[in-house]
Image 1: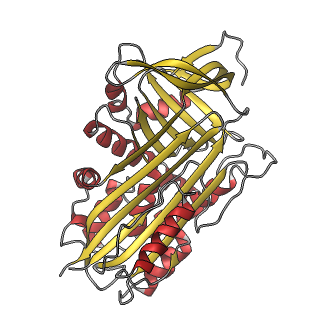
Image 2: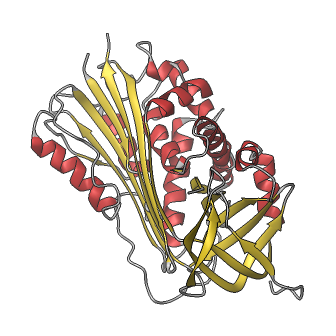
Image 3: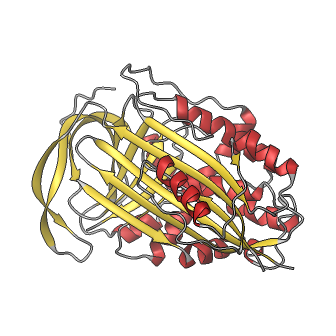
Length: 409
């Protein structure tokens, strides 16, 4: 059996366009505008957060009291790239798990093509980068129709590599390093001649807080374990968006021109973060996003850096969510190649850096496969994230979740 890798370099909080284009921030602040999708593309997009929230709930339930961050958008994009070459029940299961029931590979690919373009253009003061690559082994029989499709819809670059050599390792890791601004420097540890194909997506986002740099000061923070210790907090009193839910409070902090925001979910005193995360269904998410209102907020949260990695837990979660065929010898990826392959392993690595100036984050997902046979007159709201909280990075038009995580120590 030979190995076939799907890799996805997910994000460093500063997004860019499909195809590895770089989007250096410009000084001019463009007006806030919505991402425009066709009716069909918008129908696909409406399913995006179903997968995002379900994956987050499942992973968080297995990783209790632990800092974590995943990029469901990048994971979904990478899995969709693979699903583009899946057939029969394998495609049906993958599409259903991603929330895309009833949509074809072409419809999903067309959506991502438009969405990536919109993410790139919506705020030129925020640096954004999305890149896709396909690296077949030197003798891997990649189908021309598949290569043409992913070039068109995902702007993927295609290059043959000899995975038995250090040169291939350097090419892959150099690509990951470049497209995540060094936050995810390594995708491969060593040469592996059993690799048959590697599909990769890199997403990078770097946003500066709207309103400029925030102040910083020492404050006590209560960890998952309930212990209290001083930590460096960023803070400011400025116009933000705020919402009070059932047992939690939400603050939405904008970057740049407001096209991207960090949305922070803080459980009320006496309420657990785990129960809050478990309650984040699409209905609760949508109600919260619709309920956010502009007001002055006395805001503070910790400055933090965090890294997270998952492999077996990721694979098992996807299987439990409804796509076991892709991980079995009965998988059908005949649209990619006549050489039969199935997913042997899937991993994701992420990193985030939240500071007084803004946010940067990155993630890499790799799938290894083998062949087989407005102003408010009310008093300012106070939002002090001094105990474990959940957060998400979203774009403003559809509230698409790019990153979602937990911080508690």
